[in-house]
Image 1 (cartoon, rainbow, N blue to C red):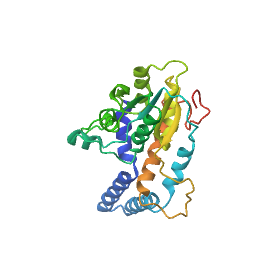
Image 2: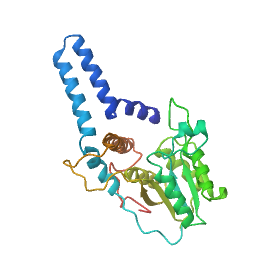
Image 3: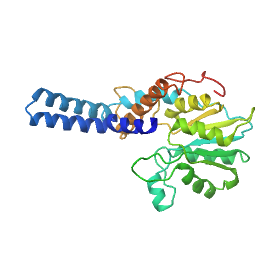
Image 4: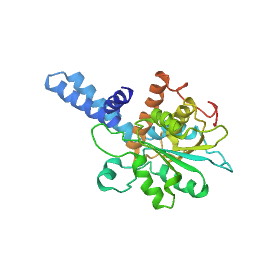
Length: 267
C-alpha cells in the first residue's frame, strides 16, 4: 500500500504536474467567472515554473543531501558491493534487450569500476520494476548485461529483482546476501539518495560503507547563480527526495528525517 500511495501522491505534487493542475483549475475557475481563483491559479503556476526552471532553488535544496555522506577512503579488503536500482531505462530495455542508462547510470558504472578494483568482491544489484502502468524490467535484470560485457563474471553477481522502493532494497538485499559479522559491503547509490538509503540499510541490520555517486551539483550554487539547463529535473529530484525522507520518518522506517553519518554501524 505504501508503494502505491507514494506513486499516486508524487504524480500530483511533482512541480510540472502540479503547475498543470493549477493552470487547469485556474481555467476552470475563469469559465465560471471566479476571477480571483483564476488569477491565483495562474500566479501559482508561473511561480512554480519560474522557481523550478529559472533559479537554483533545486540545487540549493539538493546540496545538503549530496554533502551529507562524503566518500570515505576505500577499505583494503571488500567483501561486496551493493548497487541500488534506478540507473536504467527499464521500459526501453524490456523491449530492445539492451542496457540503456539514464541520468543515474553512474551507479552501475561505478559498480563496474569497483568490481575491477576488488576482483573477489560480490556485486549485489538491487532493483525490480518500479512502474505501475508502464511495463519494464528492473536494474537487476538489465545490470548483468552491462557488467558481464565489461568482464565481471556471472558467479560474482547477486540479483535482487523484487524490490520496488528503497525500503524493499534494504530488506530484500539483506535476506539474499545474509552478511556475516566483520564483512565490509559498499553501498553505491546517488549522492542525494544516500541519506535515506544508508538509514534504511542500517535499520534493516545491514552495516554498509556509503559510496555516493551521480552528483547533480557542485555544492557552490546560490539563489543568484545562473540556473543549469536541467533546473526542473534537479528541483523535481530534490523535492521527491525530501518528501521521501519525511514520509519514511513518519512511517517509522527511518529514525530521523535527515539521517547522517553518525546514525549507526558502517557510517
